[in-house]
Amino acid sequence: MGRSNNQNIDVYGRDAGKLSQSYNAVTTDAILPKFTARVEALCRAKGGAQGLSALDIGCGTGRDASWLAAQGFQVAACDGAAGMIAAAQQGNAHAQIDYFVDTAPELTATLARGQRYDVILMNAFIFHFDYRGKDNALSQLFDHVVTLGQPDALIYTNLRHGPIPAGRQMFDIPADVVADHAKARGLIYEDLGRSADGLGRADVSWTDIVLRFPS
Image 1 (cartoon, helix red, strand yellow):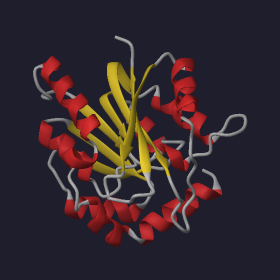
Image 2 (cartoon, rainbow, N blue to C red):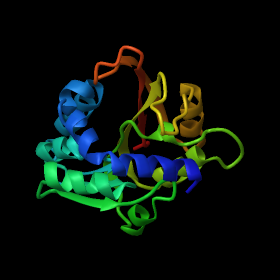
Image 3 (cartoon, rainbow, N blue to C red):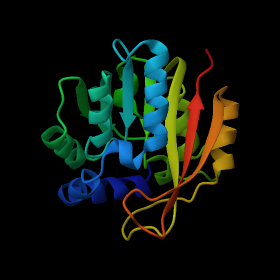
Image 4 (tube, rainbow, N blue to C red):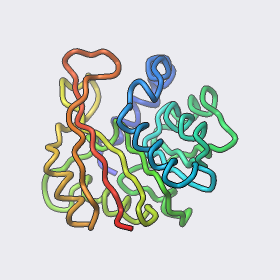
């Protein structure tokens, strides 16, 4: 993992307590309505979430993993910052969530589980990875993620646009870059358009993206 991602992990781990107050002050339904709508549609099509599994990569304080568990999913949720995982276990514990530390783009611990998932969530996550140059970190991440989905699985991710907070490394990734990664790996790409920032920051917006595995 590159120096910039180590820097991010250090910041998120150090600030986990403060960040958890901010992140948990809003609900998943409110901050990710396009995601929750797609998951609810998937559950209706499958007759409910019983027997379905979800993977939350970069789970932070566990807010969204908790929402998935409440829908009935068995959830694996990982983050590179041990402080974030500790905050998640304290504030968003659930019998159907397994929290663990894992770093990206390698995802060594996740891959070692040998499981495939019906839903993969990467919320406020992939823009931490450099998308430029040959064999870049974002490409490595997608190489691993594509091995983790069931046939017809749903991947939700988003891209952040706006000023970068001090001390963190982020990239304003063009949506076309994600589309190209999806196409190269046989995934179906859908751009859901721009969204305002769910935490109320006027200078931040998001591009919401759904990727689907073929049936």
